[in-house]
Amino acid sequence: MLIVMGAHATPEQTEAVCKKIEELGFKPHPMPGASRTSIGITGNPGPIVPEPFENMPGVVELIPVTRLYKLVSREFKGENTVVQVGNVSVGGKDLVVVAGPCAVETEERMIRIAEKVRDAGAHMLRGGAFKPRTSPYSFQGLGLEGLKILAKAREVSGLPIVTEAIDAESLDLVEEYADVIQIGARNAQNFSLLKKAGRAKKPILLKRGMSATLDEFLLAAEYVMSEGNYNVILCERGVRTFADHTRNTLDLSIVPEVKRISHLPIITDPSHGTGKRHMVTPLSRSSVAVGADGVIIEVHDEPEHALSDGPQALLPDQFARLMEELRLLAPVIRRGLPLVAV
Ligand code: PEP
Ligand code: MN
Image 1 (cartoon, rainbow, N blue to C red):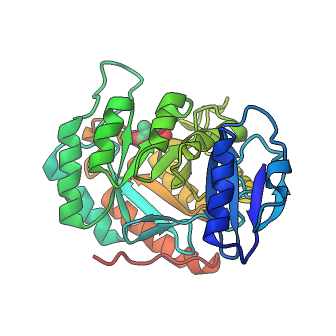
Image 2: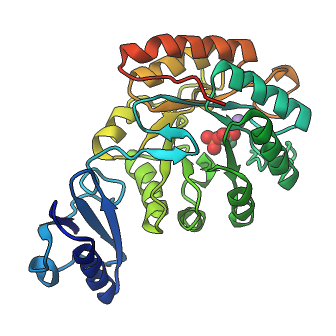
């Protein structure tokens, strides 16, 4: 059930409703909107009886929640969520571009790429320190040393850092060093990790699972939000299909559907979504055209020597051209693409 407080409800009245929810043994999720506050309820094993709330001061509506998910849904919050990462707003009018190598390799390379993508107009920097690799013999990432390099790259470039946590242990470290914690496709149904991410104090970039349906994708976000972390950025990164001309099939149709039923921002990852360098720019253009709030792009200055995902990395010059194209496209779709102010 969703409890809607009137436009003139006082903070004390909202507080009293939250207290009542707690008394019943459930968890309240007050979400202030532009004109009213909604309070979601989680932790209830079945439907909630409306009686205890019906006559409470300030309550104007009790809405039974019909969907599987509650907190991610537009029933819970009508306005788009804008996730704030330093000066960067994800999910607002402006498009957001995250760029950088698949993995942190060396400090010199990380800083070199950071400066290049920053100069081209990227708003955030990516790079994996903990890499979830299909083979145990592939490069697994530099771990803590990689996080320290990322912190240095942030200092030099001024760009906030997005990096992946692959388990509970790395999540603590990533939370300490990063600005945004990425939960990758392979962990999109690691429910204990999702819950831990929900207790973290940093925003979460949540990738869609490799074969996740829309419901499974949104329920993964629900896991994070149910623990109290409402700063979730969804990311479509392609799903596995019968198609073998790409690494994954970037499912652009999920973007307008997510926008219809959820208030959360969604970006796409045309790098993992195609696995092919020559497809990254076309699929980035189409992602923003279909309504994505931005893209996350892999960039490497020597992709032939990259320790992971070289074939899908754009060269810095190609990335700069992509940014120029997105800058031309943005006004056509009534979005902005600000040059980063650093
Ligand atoms: C990545 O971003 O480097 C990554 C491993 O992504 P995904 O989880 O989407 O495969
Ligand atoms: Mn990668």
